[in-house]
Length: 396
Ligand code: SAM
Ligand code: DTB
Ligand code: SF4
Image (tube, rainbow, N blue to C red; front, side):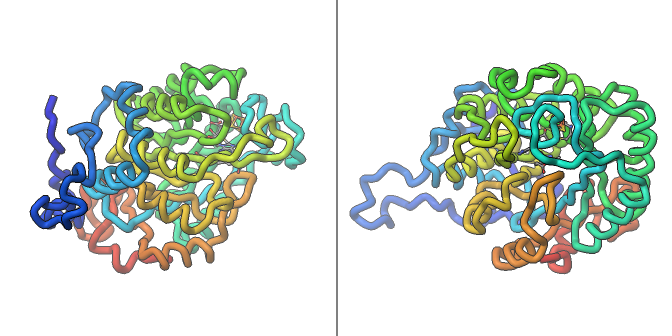
């Protein structure tokens, strides 16, 4: 196995500061007081930035244990090897079927087991979904994610959702769905309808899972993820921080994701939204720096994935979100609502992104991309930012 940093991906024109000197201070130039100090940055391993699937728990825990600034430095460096800096992908969520879910997920306001005062709603009509997707596009989102409070969809549900996916794609948006467990045949049906991403979170470590959900097991989640992959869909898979898990659980969750045969293209890191009525309503708050550490470790263990600063942003300061972007987050949920709980309003997000000099990411839908008609900038990957468009893509 190589023990040096891999070269940046050659096909992408990222603004990696290749010509700049290493920031470690040359001993002869350093002020006297610093001369005997150890190097400013201690690399935890020589393979950072490499796409790996053999992470040990100890290695991931060691990343969590790094001094905060060292961890963020490494994460930002790896981020720039694989991604356009200052670019964030924006997805808008819509709950297409709300509440009365038979599962017992302890964090979820939509479980029928908890009295959260949530009003249940039937599956929305395709026309309404189309309207909401068009509004999301007009506001600047590039992906539309449809979520349903199901354990698993029925055949008729899949037919209707397939119609929604077709409408979303016809608007020029990427499509994502999260509908619970899928059979391989259902995953293929969704792919045929034009679905780009399937969201299915492992939520936490294999060990902590049964403390949070008893109506399905960790292997059920992995089985659906495999069906989704087999169907040729991109996966969106992450978890929740703040449910009473240990740092080891966070490490084990990220290790599990990083050691999948293929990394998820998208890794949502949710901070628990503690909803009154759920068993986790009074869960202890996460130290914000520990949340940022989790983002950084996701970036380091899955260098090419989009890491989403996901649920919980409404409760975060602008400064904390900026730190999360520095740690390698490059995707957000955009729009006033997540599924049933709040999210920052678009004006606040636009202002924040503008203040930070962050652009919304442009996408070229896969089918258009292969035809090479959409922008003429020669993209090499469906979800890659178009550098040629970046300047004009500032939705903020
Ligand atoms: N029912 C489907 C399932 O569980 O896969 C799809 C919808 S479910 C709401 C999607 C994800 O939302 C969950 O896996 C969980 O990670 C996240 N989620 C749900 N409630 C949350 C909360 N209160 N705080 C943070 N994330 C939450
Ligand atoms: C994900 O990881 N987070 C989103 C999305 N995938 C479906 C959902 C967050 C839900 C937060 C609680 C709610 O709004 O109901
Ligand atoms: Fe149902 Fe999904 Fe909520 Fe669990 S997370 S209760 S499966 S909607």
